[in-house]
Amino acid sequence: LVATGQLGSKPSIIIWDAETCATVRVLRGFHRRAVLQLAWSPDGRLLGSLGADDDHSLAVYDWKDQVLLAKTAVCKRKMLGLAFGPLGERLMTVGVKSVGFWDLCEGGRQLR
Image (cartoon, rainbow, N blue to C red; front, side, top):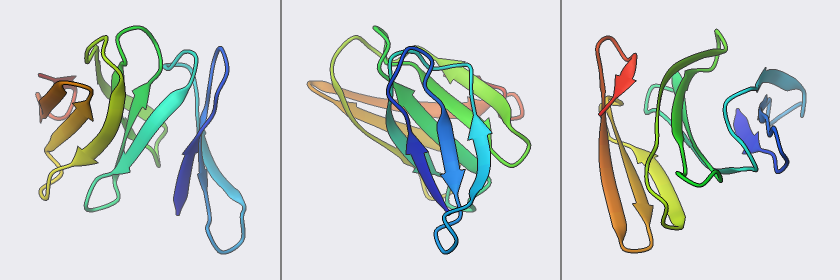
């Protein structure tokens, strides 16, 4: 599977089948302006995304069920990367003079 993010006032995240190019899922409604970064959890169950809004908001989805599990504002600096840790319970954001570590807590419903 491949995930791509759109540019626009209400961008979507589209999950594609890499072999057939068929759309598998479309995630909508959270990000504004653009989806800048995407990252799969190690088990492929979760998809993290960073947006282009003023706070570079971070979202974590259960993409198969199209559920937004957690969200938080990251920072106002330019963001350059997003990755899950090896166990899938922590994310890392990297930006200009910025590094953030985010833990999924309360059953994956909150980032801190």
